[in-house]
Length: 373
Image (cartoon, rainbow, N blue to C red; front, side):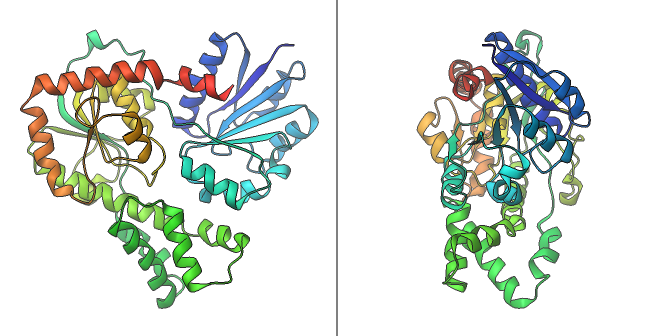
């Protein structure tokens, strides 16, 4: 019996890029594959053949209650694999109502082990939950044609933390104190998973909270996650500029810091620009048990990855050998780290090369397809 994999294109550019990478991998593995445009679900319907059909989607695209897609999953024999590349708290409604929005044969893959643990604890109806780290991209770039033009690159957008003040203060001073207490605790110890800190504060304020209460409250704390992410991003970029390095910013919003960035372009452009840099700076989202594709992609394009760490990175890479870690509690050391690397180009190139070899072997979308299929 032929096994077919379906993908959805066109909703979020980065996620469409990931979908295309996976689709190519499954095609190379001999499976039937098809990609439909998000706004044309009938295209997907017309290409269903046989009875062994699996949708692989990211961040609940197509399984968020879109009526036309719901009819497809109901009327055909489908399995659904939903890969979450953000914290599950962003998808509370979709996870609670997955049987209405998707189908019974439903699997969730998280790119952070703590995220998978979170779903098992707060959404026990979802029986198939697993952790698969994100992959990198860019292994197909012809590096012989690439010239290193920048000392350091950062790809990603920026939002000033004060933009989140209305969300923090909207329910009055007591709630604002509650929210800021969570933020302060997270920034005082950046090693702790987001949900652990939130749980402690919720139970302190509302000791009788049930699991349903907990997951609902946490689904309303998205601005806390974004606040701490951009707080650290701002500190890292400001400190980086003290190094005097030639820095390339790819993303919007940096004018708030008095800096100029190239508009955030499609993923392929970001990869080609990253390949032109000697060092790629990463500031992790609050993923303490996973990776970020920015790091693995930097490795695949032979650019040294400079990042704050996670348990997964510490377990899979060696500081100073195939990656360079900085301590996000001591951002003031970033300029010296960058200067030291740029002053030792042979070491920098050696670290980048060792990282590329490891990433090519274990951290491409092909390696992840083997785990997902």
